[in-house]
Amino acid sequence: MRQWTAEQLDAITARERSVIVSAAAGSGKTSVLVERLIRIIADRDNPVPVEKMIVVTFTNDAAAEMKQRLSVSLSGLINDRPFDKWLSRQHAMLGNASISTIHSFCFDLIRDNINMLSLASDFRIIDETEENILKDSVLKDLVDGYYEKYPEMMEMLNNNFCGNSDAPFCRMILELYGCISSIPFFKNWLKGLDGQYDSNIYLQEYIKKLKNTLFVCSNKLNTAYEKGSEISDDKLMTLLSDDKNIVNKALSVLKANDYEELSDYFSCVKYKNFPAAGKNYAYPEERQFIKKIRDSVKETVKSIADNRAMLVNARDDIKRHKEIMSALSQIIIEFSENLYKAKEAKNAIGFDDAEQIVLNLLAECSEDGKIIRTKLAEELSEYYQVIMIDEFQDSNNRQDMIFRLLSHNGSAEEYGNNLFFVGDVKQSIYRFRLANPDNFINAVNNAVPYKENDKRNSYIKLNRNFRSSEQVINFVNYVFKNIMTESVGDIDYNKNEYLIKGAEFYENNRNTHIMLIDKSDESCEDTEAVCISEKIRRMLDEKISVSRDNGKSSRPCEMKDFCILLRNRKKIPVYARELEKRGITVS
Image (tube, rainbow, N blue to C red):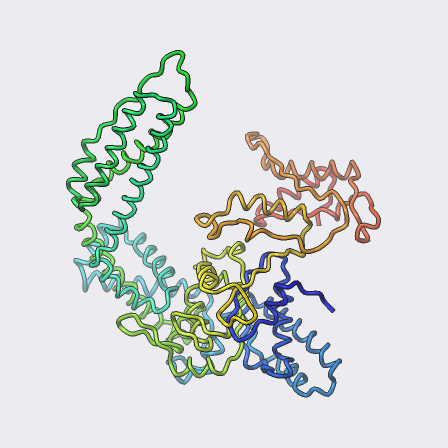
């Protein structure tokens, strides 16, 4: 029987709440998912039938693998309990279980409720090429019509976004539509933008940012002043005192919200020259430290001064932006409606449409933006007892809303108590497809650490890696603790996020090597390919040993022992050529 870690066992056995599992690479998350499902299905006291489960995977292949692994596990249980009719029925029903991608689930839900929609029951899934052609056609017709109906509006948009043609404008509309349509009930969101412009929120945010910037400058100057005090340099301290007064005066004017006075003030700011040092100056390093800080502050203040017109013209600019955004919103909303009608005429919908249709089946959005579950959503949330989501870090905002609405006792604002999320923010790579890893981060932040008797929504961390050697794990931790922060990577990669060795490996030299390559040699087509090929050739010639039989013996390395991972296929011919030049066969 497999030995589970304490954290894995918690993830498998946690019940009566939603659970968010942060599962690092190689932590056995798929095995945990399968084991959790099997135990829920086979629970003698409170079993759940497979038809009352939703399991969402990221790919069709992952869904097929999940079903296969469940089938194997159920078969093993049936061998142990041959007269258990419940288990036999679940095994028989597994092929029809809702274990699929989110889009497959959405299409199935649409078909099940087709009577509530204007689509025909035999609708098809439109391919990307056809959909893009349809978008271009619908937008062209819409824009042509707007030139006739709203000439002043289009003149304003042309002046802001077009050159000699409206092609850039059309591309922008398509890009905006692609991004904005990922927002649940985006039409209501667009309609609410006018209120945000009227509330002066944008000006307030800019002022807040400006104040923070000036506070940072003030703190920097305080640090420099303290350093000047340590070395008793009166000239530097007088200079820094004047610099501090410049920043403090700006903060004082900014606090009074007198933007014209602030603009006038910045236009008159003058900095004194940094005093020269004598030949035998005793503190050259401290002096350089102070100068570096002062130059940084001067550059920041200069940048604010160069953009001071933004403050004076802020209200006029915001008013203008409101007019532009109102026009863009009108076009995007009408484009969306016309595009859907064109798809309806073809009896075809796309993947994004499927998510939006399901949202409309599960909830209604009032004019004030309040999202309320429909009767169908209430029924489904009572019907489905288990909802599992794999790779949750790569879900988008629409999908996240769907999960909330389907969950038991859930709402548009909160997750219910029968969800099981698995993901890893560190592995989120689909922002370009509008995935929002903040959904995962917020779910973790709004949950509590798992405790068996605490029925609040909980999170569990699986950081133990069973795939890699200790040397690889240490190298990964070293790299990412230095480059991954909340501002660059969504999380602070600290000891709470470190990978932990989970498996024992036979003794061997597994140190990671980094090859720094000089790419200045323009005569070489690809220095990386050359360097790697030569490295492999040397290792083959030196008969570097590799282990076999789990470290019980060793042998000289062979060509089949090497693997080169590339970012894409484009460079494969280059690498193949360089390897073959050195007598290395490529498979």
